Length: 138
Image (cartoon, rainbow, N blue to C red; front, side, top):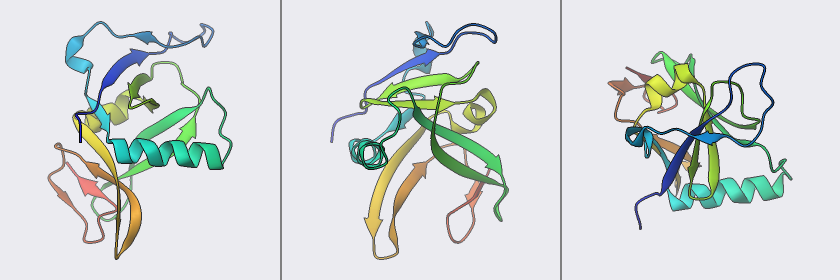
């Protein structure tokens, strides 16, 4: 499987119209949030099946909760002011600044197995997770 190709962008400041996001000049940000080919295909499959607006991206968010302290959330959304916007494997990933602090370097995969199927986060910033794997600590 090839290495995910990514491009990083950010939206305009508050009050500005919401045109297409503009690239961030910092090359260190490229690849900071990745999606495998399998995960990207699954996102596209869901987008097509649910007839998601073309302007919406996949929001990747960290929220407080779960037995280990934090949990991930994925949903389709419009870019918001201040978002980091990553174009990876043909999918637009949206990430707010607070979540990005916990997600930098993360690769999202889609796995199927005996216990079910779902998106799996390979996050180098975690120090532990709960037994069921639905939450993490840093």
